[in-house]
Every structure is written in structure tokens, then in C-alpha cells.
Image (cartoon, rainbow, N blue to C red):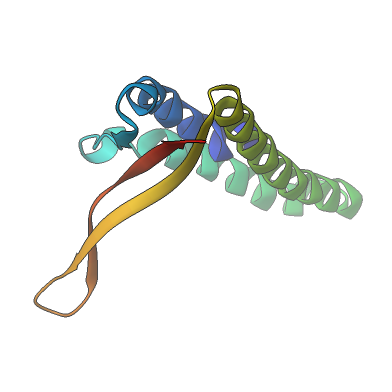
Length: 123
């Protein structure tokens, strides 16, 4: 469950950008409309949080702390696995991948991200 919340959305976005990244050396992240992008994340996160609240009331403390520790360890390990996957992918293609973002300031002085994505340089 933690894998689906932490890594799966990033993996889908990266796999969609990888072909363009190899061909052009730069890939802009796709903007998905409205809630379509966030519904899976919010749903999965809500299930994890509600499960913890329910466990507080019905489960022994050891089960609660064990599941909480498992969620944290699963989140950290899934991030590590995704980072290692991207590193392996880029090295096998002879690329150095880095992220970029283009930002501007709005009329209130806050930073607004206009575009973000990945860029690749041959090594």
C-alpha cells in the first residue's frame, strides 16, 4: 500500500517522460486536469491514515506501532528503490538526468511554478 502512495504515481510519470527524454534530452511533465491527478493519491493516503486511527481503538499497541513503523519503512524503502531505478535507467542509456523547473512571481509576490520536468545530458 505504501508503494502505491509513494512511488507508483512517480513511476507512471517517469515512464511517460522517458521516451521523450532519450530522444530530445528534455521532457516536460504532463499536466493532468484537476482531480484526476490527485484522486488516487488522496484515496490511498486516506486509507493509510484511517487504518491507523482505527487501529488505535481496536488493536493492541504493538500492532499499531508495528504497522506505523512498517508504513514509514515502506515509504523510505520505496523512495530508495525508485531513485535506484532512475539511476540504473540513466546509466544504462549513458545519460545524466536532472530535474528543472521554471517559476515566476505572481502579483502577491508568491512563487508560481510554470513548468517542471527532466533534462538529460549525454555523459
